[in-house]
View 1 (cartoon, rainbow, N blue to C red):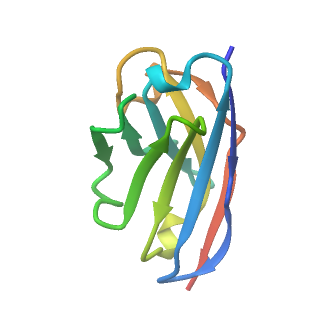
View 2: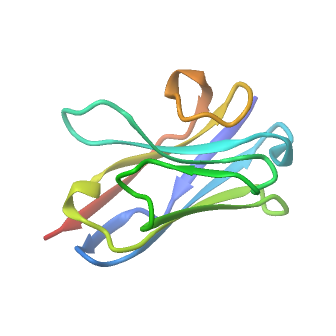
View 3: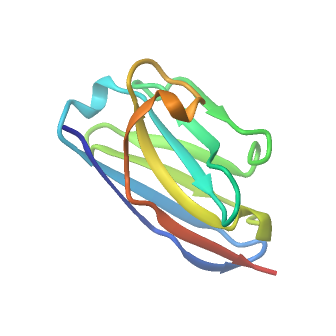
Length: 123
């Protein structure tokens, strides 16, 4: 059983930055990929970023490419999402998740999810 706990959300002005953290427990963190997703009110959950177990391979949604960076520290069982140049349209609940298998952008292939952390970007 894997437990995921996000932190680092908050209110920020447009153009600002936030760093989200996701602490994992249970399982062997260094052996599995991780992903970040977000869901805005009235919208479907969407993929944001994903990272392979080693950290060597990363994937981003086009909407965040060049502004967000996913990373991981396997010694700390933590995955991060550095968010820069934030826009009001980035406002959402951000959740980290663990896929059943290899790294993927498809939310249906993730089997463990955190509770989410709210990110609000004011204009």
